[in-house]
Length: 254
Image 1 (spheres, rainbow, N blue to C red):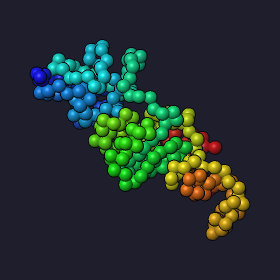
Image 2 (image 1 turned 180 degrees about the vertical axis):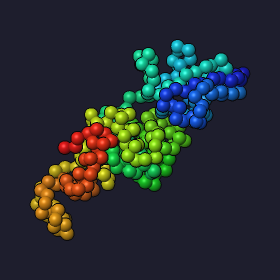
Image 3 (image 1 turned 30 degrees about the vertical axis):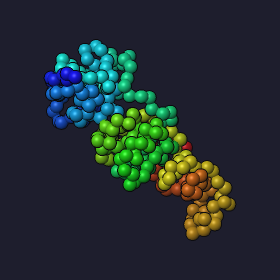
Image 4 (image 1 turned 45 degrees about the horizontal axis):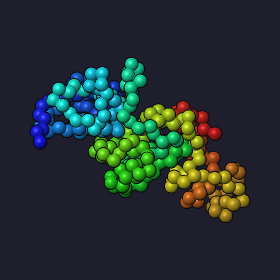
């Protein structure tokens, strides 16, 4: 079988420039001896496929599985494509509604913030990359990671790489990207294990909180995790996190 050889020009736009070396706003050249997929060509330049929503060759949109040709001059966009291209079908699948996530071991604080907002976020600190990718694929979850290699895995359909190292900033990015405030149920999920919270009578927690007399004296409203049994009440931590949600998600907590 004869293989194509040549050079293709790929130009990235908008948010995808984050993945390119600083100052690399122009076309990038990809030399090849065989016929790689557009996905492989794009990822060879550092851009993970779950971040790519539109690939254009002139006015023609292409699938990531399409083969690269020597004459190709491609324009690649993320979700922030220009308005005049808004009507073209996107490559990124719609996220689950409500969104649910899997976060890698370096994003524990982000996972905690998402749970506080009420979203299902699978997290294991020591989970290996294979495990994370399979959980994302098999459970139709959005993979959150700062590891480009992990996000490039073929089985990953939905994913996002936070642009900042700061957990609060990451939370703001994810909240905006997936329109989380409109779907949020703050303080409805356990931050420790991801289980759902349910109201519980004060009398049911008296014995378990016997070593916290001030809590029992000043609070009458309690919740219990249906999975691990952790007890929650609207104390100072609740107030701090309410301010946090207001600042980074624009949300007034109940």
